[in-house]
Length: 446
Image 1 (tube, rainbow, N blue to C red):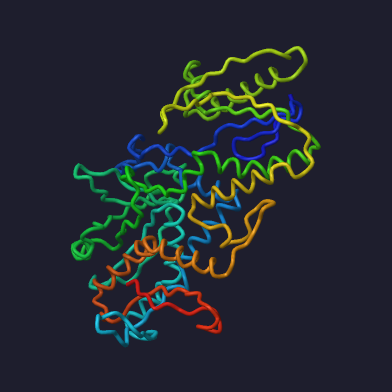
Image 2: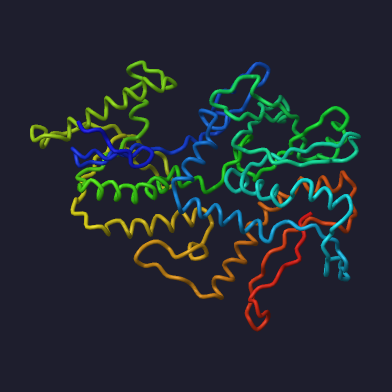
């Protein structure tokens, strides 16, 4: 049997069979409390994913898909707007709302803003919030402990929480550059602030702690440790795999001048069942991979050669509950397909997949470029402007959660009440109102 050509995660092309083997590569999104805690000496870590590397797997997947990558960048850039600015309110209306403001360019607030490079800090935090719905800002005091001196970004990929105590509180944050090979000495342990009474905690730990972590996150039902963005559904639904597979499949087929007669779909439960019956430990990656390779050869032998024509294969399936009753989930499915490739076969599939992924990620495809496919079209300027403004409004919760630590620092450091850190946005308008077609908003965040 010719060695399979890797197309994308879980998808291989077998030229001698003129077949594609597809194994479900969805990330394991089981609830956090389904996993056993990881123990590193005195540290009891709540794993992020089955192997504690879920963020790493997600980054790898994101980097392989141009639609997902572009959507994430768009969502982050919408939140970032024109970037954080330090301003002072100079005029208010009768209701106390800010009518005019001016940039602040001196004083302790300005020194804090410049020393910590707040625009970069906010961009880093927004990136983790958009990607993971979790961010881990680190707050440090000055020598006299009466002021917060620095705020730093701690990457979510390297961050983990401790196991909750008996009162449901997470008390410690663990940071490690390589969780796959981590030992006790590789982990940095930091106290976690109470998200609901943060000022009291800052005062409480100022004398004893140099660094503290504030838990910034977007709410995610049923996830007590690590939040889960709604758009992760594209991994479980299969649309991510489909989006990655189409261009790579066409490239492999055209490069090898081959048609494809079969697509073989295999559920991971199929191999779990085999390993269980044969006593293979699912944590032993080498033995599991050897068994998978053996099964691939069995499929190759089954599909190749005239002597196997008209033979049947027995495949397991199970009934899964759904809103309308039950649906069949097949453990193995072999689908014959036409092999008269001419170069434009999957254009419609690409278009549909791109639209579904954009829908899941809350991005109108026309705002970041033409929709892939034969029916690509653009929208009028007025519609685009309204869609963009709606998107800005819908992203406000993410901006609010990201800016929350800075608001706490403002209160702790007793900044002037008229000084704010704001993220102004472009408000696109018509040319008769503004010759440039845009003007700057004056909304404040901190």
